[in-house]
Length: 271
Image 1 (tube, rainbow, N blue to C red):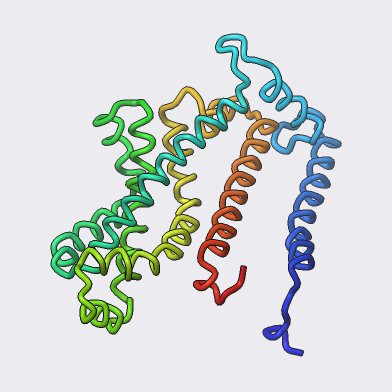
Image 2 (cartoon, helix red, strand yellow; image 1 turned 90 degrees about the vertical axis):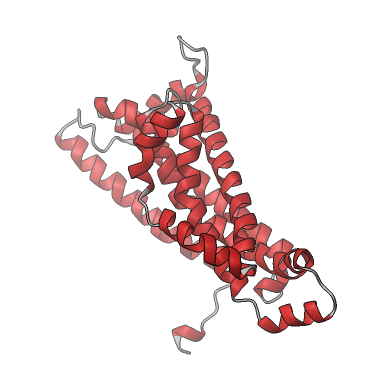
């Protein structure tokens, strides 16, 4: 049987997906052990024991100045910024994307503007955002929104514009207004695509969040990583990076599960 025709069961897929991760961990441990055998003070590749010791205080010991458990406070602050940015971007993509995709006059008027904003590197706007909104939460959330919302809007608008013209004509023949076309024809078909757009935007959203926190923040996962880098504290940086990757993976899986459960028809009936 050709490989292109092979189907992998769910349990075997999980096992096969874990193999590369395990191999990377083993490779890291081997290289780290060799480096520490040559130089016990090596900080570049810390051993698991050193990472546990460094993270213990951040996880379970309150900070002397603030009284907070820094790891959990960093996580909560970053997730609040991330979810707020994603929420605003999702609503913007849904509303603006429907209007651009369904209404040609709106698309002709604002389509070029959305495209122009989408091609601007969001990081280049960071100084402008800090000047306009200050160093508070607004600038950080705005960077996420500016970074991902235009791409989501273009994706949703393109999906709506590509809906079969026959559906629009039949709905109008039955007396549907523009509002009804938007709500009863376009909206149900665009929701699965919207969730997929959020999935694809998770990676860039994390990038913009970490960038903003690294430049101007006093708490957050990105802030902590860039704070301890001056001390070459890889025993803190690596666990934080692994935690960010785990959070991103969990969010991705939740979105996939939600999409399949809520809209099985968009995935060939598979739940």
